[in-house]
Image (cartoon, rainbow, N blue to C red):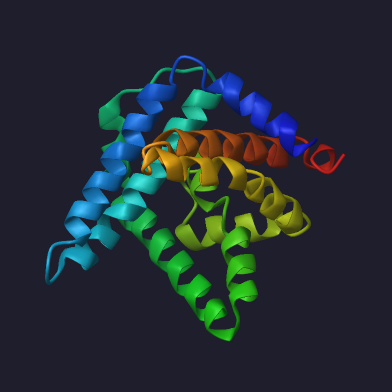
Amino acid sequence: MTYTEFRAQARVKLNGVWNKAAILWLIFGALTGAIGSVPGAGGIVAILIAGPMMLALAQIFLKIDTGMDFQMDELFKGFNDFSRSLSAYLLIMLYTLLWSMLLIVPGIIAAIGYSQTFFIMAENPQMSATEAMEASKKMMMDYKSYYFMLMLSFLGWAFLCIFTFGIGYLWLQSYVEATRVLFYKRLISEPGTILT
């Protein structure tokens, strides 16, 4: 499946919810940014809320993929699974940082390996953070290069968003996330068809 086909399908999935999804990223960015800028413990609190909200975003975009509607307050549902989502976020940050200390490329490879973790957790609430991370690594074993190039295919859009004073990134984030969900769904159902 080509990068263009993934992106085209993502645009179809987002029909009717582009603006609503963009508001999710606005709330996420505003909260983490505002809290993170508070002197003292602000950065720590921002980290504490990022994991649960990333799990919630994964849950929401999985719903969007199936054509289901969502409510804005669902962005905070990840706090119902606080310890698991925080553990995943912290461990991914830690492992990616440790690999990055060797060289940038190993850090990128590590991040890509864990890229499916929150989708896996969203669909498998019985799995621990470490189990979901391990499952993601196994799933991505033969698809790291493809995933990297798929994400890189958004570079042109990212460049254009600069000229919107960054506002365009709210919609681009949804575009990327919807594409990531499609990749994940194909990875768990028909992995052999991704590279064709």
